[in-house]
Length: 384
Ligand SMILES: Cc1ncc(COP(=O)(O)O)c(C=O)c1O
Image (cartoon, rainbow, N blue to C red):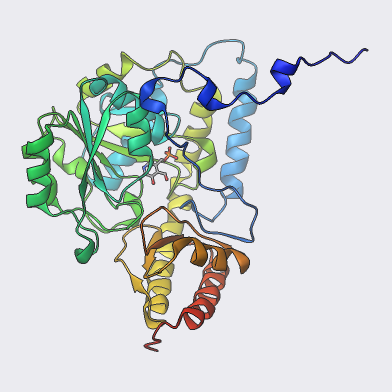
């Protein structure tokens, strides 16, 4: 067989700035947590425990069973999966919900994108409390939504100050408000009073992003849906506590009208038959999987105490990660961890870096590196 010849046009690297990109994307950067192969990967807030052998066997069996039907499109509205998610949310939050309150997509990022497609767009604003999850502005840019920010209180563990929040909402009149709780990257939670102040002030919808809620000891915002049915959407994911980042399954809980709204913008058959079957298998084993949550929360406290004793400042966290500092030069400190085979995350907040809580041995490696770096940069060891 002769090798097809490649044209220069295909082989040459056309630069992005030579393309007629829409104005709102010019100068933006893609989401990009580095995917490096390092022994201790503590940079993307995954659950470090692999799925149980029972889950793997169940998943393989489900996939084999449906493989003979792959010539057909999947169940478009994912009703069985939404029913299983509703059962999980009812059990986890104590708030009775049904499939009509649930919507699922390929990761909570897709859920958030669908919500922005339906409720935001040109001429509308989305407001976020920063620092927070970097995808909220990126998804806003992708839907031509102006993203505006209200700073969190750096001196109060990066909490949202309710008065500042209400003033920012009154000022910007955003169509969408994002509240991430526990917040990524800082780990702090937003209490019920602050949430209701935000909900009362918001002229549009409020998306409470609860990607890390299983790690928190506080009440889920799902409890507030009954009070704010036309405003509140709670987004969740199976990527964190559920050990299921590779499976790509996110969902939201809200009044049924929100499900009708996203059905107007979702792609037909957006969740493949394989994705639906795999998520159902993962949900059948949620007891085993979620047993790792308590272990991770206990490890988080152990690591936090140790970092504090070394002289670091550590933000209070109810998630599976810690935000710590102070650092004069983030990039330099990030590299010092990497040189010790520990990959953590620089999210672009001056003076602070984020580490995921991993397996005990990975956390030990992080602490060994942190101890050595503390000595190098002259942090005061409090020893307690
Ligand atoms: C706050 C927050 N929301 C949503 C997501 C996205 O999760 P998913 O994997 O479900 O798209 C993440 C992932 O890191 C996150 O930190």
